[in-house]
Image (cartoon, rainbow, N blue to C red; front, side):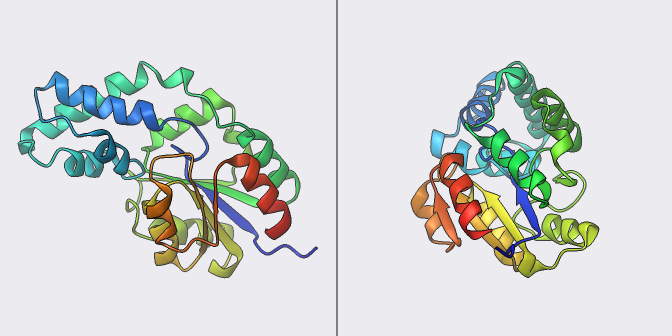
Length: 218
């Protein structure tokens, strides 16, 4: 069967790795440390996928400007204390290996910074499976299309041959802005109804369903 896509781009947190609760909890703990208003669970989860400073400004808009740098530091303290124990989602590795072996180009587009993504790829031993990556500190944060546009340019793939896989509206809106198809995964940070509003080509519960969908449609 002829392939529909040449490039498949994955978000990282909440998509490939089950980090949603730890990220949201680390944002909340950092706010408590600095005696700032603590965002509720929905707000803390909503900012996942954005660049860290952008995320904190959204989650804690009441914070004085001088508090954001300390807030970043406290967030990283709490997140890194748990980083090495964050698991991949079930069948994530198998799916990505299968795609690589089938000849797809694979990439990551994430709200992490470069150091954070490199650390995660090393910890999970997933770095060797991706042909290119983009992080929010090296280009525009989601939902700006720059990450996808740069990845397509680097790997010489057109928008109609590119698929974005993510768990947030930031991922799906980035795909719309870049003119590429997107699949939404409901096992991450944003609720299914919000993802559905952005009309992904598929809305799937987990990597078990994604693996089957990709075999049939990608």
